[in-house]
Image (cartoon, rainbow, N blue to C red; front, side):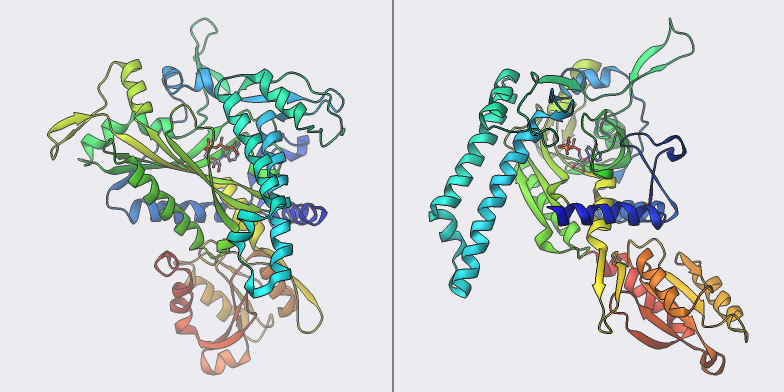
Length: 511
Ligand code: ATP
């Protein structure tokens, strides 16, 4: 645990030191759970957004984009259920005065049991070696079965009491499980209360005529209210999808863990409209497609897992999370939800407008069902960034800090150096920069010894460095150095562009 915390601290300080993420309005001591993206952060974020957008919109002929406003008519949030039900159960510890999400306390308790079970399994696997049968061990070992049973009982009861809005039972569960406050260590809890997460604001000049608005807590509703506009003007036929990226706002109760849980964040969502009755087929399709998107980035297949929801949201008939192995353990990175026809039907009811599709094959009109994929861009940023930050021992006994970002996402693709600041080498290097800048984000650096410059780019995440030396003048070749392998090769200046393009093109990454 201490090691994990240590690694997470390194991630946060590295993100600041290399211009990825700063605390918001830092000169005024910051604003809790709000962050700014620096010169490298903005590029990484943009590249992740683009990787998502291309794979959703460009790669699917039946998915189109949208950019809806953050402000929406306030009835939107009545219809969607957010005014009545977009809340989290909170609980305070009377001794530490710290506030927690009651459901998260129980989920963390369950995860600890899961880790104990995994430890037993790992121990046995070590003992039995190649002959170890994991499935059989999990099905028969009394300790593993005991942990898993306890886990299921806790999460099952939580789901039941939240469904029934029985907050007294959520508190009773926390007490029965003897969950203590991680800060004070005490079990001195307040009652559980519901807390609405939407930020309110006002539209209009005078206090009397101003309208109460909300900052959108998700981008999805902008898609639902435009369903018919897009379907008709784009002549879309079911099944089809609408994709959108943009800011969302939630007044989170506990907003710790850096950019994992923010109050202002960005979502990348896609709503896929399907025939009623076909939603499960598409739910499975999107589960698989989205997991493939994640693994295409090479962060390690073992770092992802599905977590099916036990407590379904009011609009869903199936839901799963793709969880990622963050520095603080497996947590939700993306949600895939089968939202039924709940949203479109609710908007029909509240607006009095028909939001239906005439299906020529069936010769009937219906309200489509929806399967959505919803991922937090900032969370994806944290997944990529934390997984990429590594400290390596080198063969010569020294060590290096390297940010092994997938090359397609790296903010700067190439750094170009003259070996020395004289003999015409800077001029050649600057000419190379001028040629490459049309296709890639490229920088020029001539300060310090070349080894130091390589390390600087390693830590900043730049996948390729090009060095111009005295041989370049004679034979028009340069050295290309690869960040991950640290291998160096001699290549012709005229081939640089094609070599880098091959390594960072969307086509060569997406499977
Ligand atoms: P959680 O259970 O972590 O609060 P959620 O289930 O409420 O998340 P969704 O409403 O499904 O999240 O939102 C979709 C995605 O948006 C999440 O998978 C996550 O990546 C991202 N997200 C949600 N809330 C936040 C937040 N406060 N900060 C950053 N990203 C967020």
